[in-house]
Every structure is written in C-alpha cells, then in structure tokens.
Image (cartoon, rainbow, N blue to C red; front, top):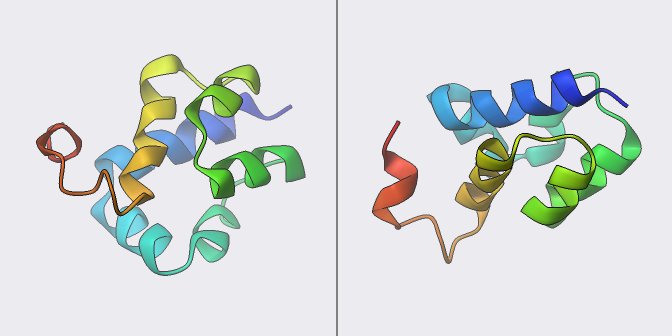
Length: 81
C-alpha cells in the first residue's frame, strides 16, 4: 500500500490549483503522476472518503476528494486552505 502517495495526491488536490484543475478535467491523468495501487485509483475515481480512509488516507485529506464532485464544488469549505 502506498499511503504516502495517496495522501500526497489528496494534499495536492487541496493545495495545488494545477493538480486540482487537472483532476477535474482528467482524473486518471492526474493520479497517474503518483505511485498508487489500482485499489487506491478506484477509490479516488469513486470519490468515497470512507474507502480512502480504509486504504490509509488521513481523515481530513480524504474529504478533499469530494471537491471533484459537482454537488460539493460550490461549498465554501473547499475553497478554504
């Protein structure tokens, strides 16, 4: 399991605007830059924070996958760093 790389992607999703925009347009391409297992890639694609936590993602960082969901994108919480 590569929990470092999973957490690194989630942190970058939060803090790096370029990674965020890339993930919005092409998630598979964005996560290909990280050494992730197929299970981690599937969990990111599913956008499920609970599944990410089981794979070793930090609880707070796991929530940032929800920024990719159109229903949550306009929430003020995601724009705060």
